[in-house]
Image 1 (cartoon, helix red, strand yellow):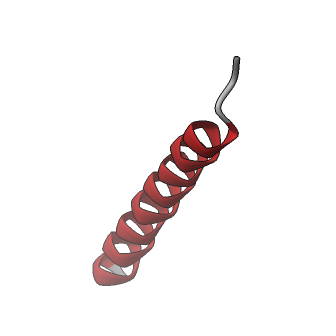
Image 2: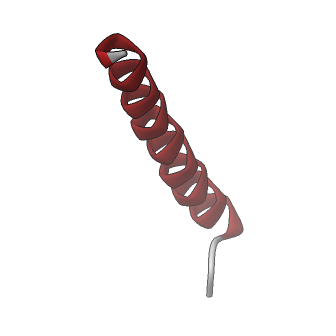
Length: 33
């Protein structure tokens, strides 16, 4: 049985991690310019 709450929590963590990574990349990009 798949627990939707566990799945969505995992997906949210993945999405947050992706956005955090993107923010770090954008921040380092603007610092280099």
